[in-house]
Structures are given as structure tokens and as C-alpha cells.
Image (cartoon, rainbow, N blue to C red):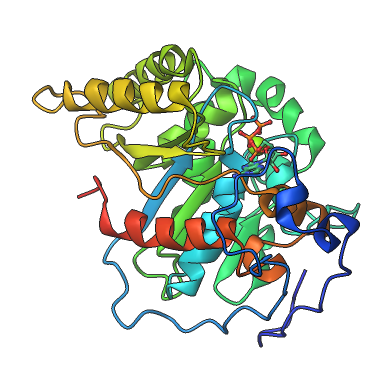
Length: 331
Ligand SMILES: Nc1ncnc2c1ncn2[C@@H]1O[C@H](COP(=O)(O)OP(=O)(O)OP(=O)(O)O)[C@@H](O)[C@H]1O
Ligand SMILES: [Mg+2]
């Protein structure tokens, strides 16, 4: 973790074996880069320059899909980093007891440091005591495996509705308009379940983005997810809307992927005139291609922009950040 108030260019990572071979040698790799562009040349990411006009309100986005392994954490980490490159202050929240987002940023909780579990369970702890800086512009509310126990700890408060909004209450000061350093974006990495942790994320959020893979049954999972969003909108958060879907690990060549994308488009277009929370949802472009560098970078505790900034995965997330900035359903 970088505690310095000044940006320090990251050290050049050791080049792993996988990087020493050309990308085309990866069996599951779909690379659209030129043969000489291996994306393996790590360069320092640009220093943080705040955007001249900060958005008036913080966009709080839950990366949500109850299906596992679809690209939620990869998207949360790299989209957040790409938004920082666009001059946005970003707070990320690791809402998953697997703590993959924290590990992706190279953060491991030791005995002395606080985590999201402590924040949610200790009435006297402030979010500012738990949030850590990854590098200028990018912050993290980190987690560790004990977060799994939070549902039991908060169970007695479910009946009053307090358990569902504890994260929101804890972040009031950080997100207050009186805080000059308040983030422009909050990106929440949800666990692959629809339990109390996800409900807390949806109660805090004003937008949902659904990372998904264009696979068989993906749309069936989506309808369950949208039902949950509707329930939270009716119960705890009338501002909640779905801004869109991010297609991850996309294999443009397969017929199935093309069919799923067409079905998804038809489904979303069919909702435009209704009053559902996903009536303005889009499929964000570009679709994130399958790119082995995206799978390698978390094991170095680095985002794709520190690890392999010229690879196709870095380009996809960079372009996605512009698309996300350009399309918001949050008024
Ligand atoms: N575009 C991509 N190309 C190649 N590998 C990817 C890509 N996106 C994600 N992965 C890999 O796929 C796996 C699943 O991704 P990820 O952890 O982001 O999914 P998740 O939805 O957060 O999973 P979980 O539900 O367990 O939290 C990881 O090993 C990740 O490195
Ligand atoms: Mg994850």
C-alpha cells in the first residue's frame, strides 16, 4: 500500500513466465493487439490530476451479479483505476469476504489494521479510520475473510432495517457534500450472493452495473438479479437504478455469445417504456475481451495499468471508463 501523499511510480514487476511468451501462445487468449504489442511493458501510470469539473454528486455503483466468476472484481479494480486516470477520485469498497478486490490492489489486512468487518460491527469506528489509499486518487475500504461473519453479527438488527443500511450510515460523513475530498465515484465489489452484504451495497448505491459473461443461462440469472434490485428499490433505496451491463471475458467469435448479446439487447429494449429500475440500462461498450494479462495482474497486487498498460485488457477498461462517465442513470 502507498501511504505517501505523493505519487511514487510503481516498481517494475518481475516479468512472470507467462509474460515471456507471446500472447498468441495462450490457449484461451483472444488478442486483437498487433503481434509486437504484447502489453507486457510495464510503465508508471500517470500521476493523478483531478478533473477540472467534478461531478456534482457522487456516483455510487454496485458491481453486482450473484453468479460467481463473471468478472465483478476484475471490473471493479480496473474500471476504478481507469476512472482515476480520467481525473476522478474513486473510493472502492470490498464487499466480498473472499477479499479479492483488496488482494488485487495488494492490500492484506494484518492484526493491527481495521477492515470493513470492524467498520460494520463497531459502532464507534469511523470509515475514515478504515479507508486506505492505494495511490493518489484511489482509495479502498478493505476486507478480509472475517467479513463472512458480519451477517450473523447484524442479524438482530435486520428486523428494524438497521442492518440493511449500516454501510450507508457509516459512509455518511465521507460522502457528505461538506467533505471537500469526497469521491466522485464509489465502486462496490459485491460478493456472488444476494445476502445482507449485497443488500447493504444496494442500499448505499445509486446505480447497479452488472458484469456478466455472454453464456447460456446468463439471462435467467439476470432476471433474478433484477428482481432483487426492484425489491431494494421498493424497500430501502428508491434512487436505485441499473445503468447497464458490462460483458466480460468476451469471445466475439462464438455464435452463442452473439445470440446472448442479441437476446440481452432485445430484453433491455423491451423495458424502455416501463417503470422498472433497468429501463435506461445499456450494454456498455467496448465489451471486455478475454485477456490473460487481466487474470495475471491481481497476483502482483497491481491493476492492469500498472502491470501491462498497453495490453488489450487495459485498452478495454480505459474505453469503458469513458463510456461509464458518459452514461449515468443517476439524476
Ligand atoms: N477479461 C478477462 N480475461 C481473462 N481473464 C479474466 C477476465 N476477467 C476476469 N478474468 C479472470 O476470471 C476469473 C473470475 O474473475 P473475477 O474474479 O473478476 O470474477 P468475480 O465475478 O469477481 O468472481 P467472484 O464471484 O468469485 O467474486 C479471475 O481469475 C479473473 O482473473
Ligand atoms: Mg469477485
